[in-house]
Image: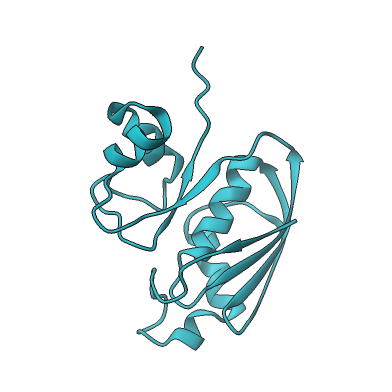
Length: 148
């Protein structure tokens, strides 16, 4: 269980630019399902820009993707993560995109190699559909390198 902070006034608008409507639990639940994320006993509540998500997921990767999918919604400033992971694994880092960032630049910063940008792109699918389409304020998963 963790609290994650996000940039509240950026991100995906789920309902006709109406911030409060996009934060209702039904709309947020639909966003999780739209991505195909399977969360057993999914429960979402929202109040004042803070979203609480609970349930059970199969992996740490899925937990992080659920948190990011919700956190990258316009109007969400904080996620209270109460998801239970069946098989705990090491956590990825989260990174907030700054103006002028590219996945290559972020990859160089974290991995020392700009050519590893596809690892970051793949780690953030399906929320990212194109490696060139990131925006300031967006939160990304930065997985640990598993190469030997």
